[in-house]
Length: 356
Image: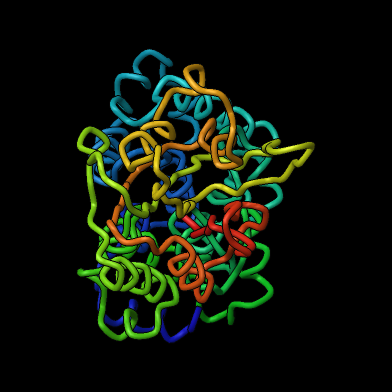
């Protein structure tokens, strides 16, 4: 990641996430009120849309203004106040227990230390870092799914979890960005660099050198080069040709395949290149075989073992016999998984990986 990307976002976005807005709106109040509201709103915001968090926070703070109010409010009333945030019943319990712990262990004051904050019910490192930066104006790096995803897409880190991303960013990211990276990438991640990226909406200065956009563009160029077209699962032609399956693995898995082979496959996208050019095969029966439920087919090819856990998201076909050529081109930009070549060539692999 070029830190200039963060400078560009700071200049161009001019938006704030809901917890940042709540923090800004309470800047003139004392530190305890600010810390209380930032902490509670961040707990509420998990798996919840910004608009809902904002609406619920406003409603809640009319009734609950401090730790004592949170201790004294009936849990059923608290649940009603914070509905419809995600997991509102669980969050209500966390908030009640959190308030009691703050009262008993910290004299009613929100701790200004990450290691102490994460001891509170419902508080992880993401929340703790946000409280530290927004409420106490101290250095922390709040890493949520957006910061984790985008930092990896920009190749600034190569990590498998938000917690590991935070630790790597603490080593590599200049301190002047620590307090602002979360707001910048949360807004950017929701509007542009989402789980399914909206690259057409991206800022041109970022797009020009973004390594993730470069890979996506390169893949589309390969599709054009070999005359691939996208088809639906229900409309596979009875023709010969080459195909690419875009497979999504929703979580990392240790998968056994072939003869006594075992490997960890990371969460993300896999592109598998195959063909149906033989006298008894065609695209319809070959791809149809991949699409079968695992209970309906014998596991024959190595890719079948991956498909037990992954979903085929997109299918591309061409009538040209270009399986190996496509594989060699993909190898120029994409990480490959060895052992997934075909029996008719010397390619090391026809399976390629893209981070989510």
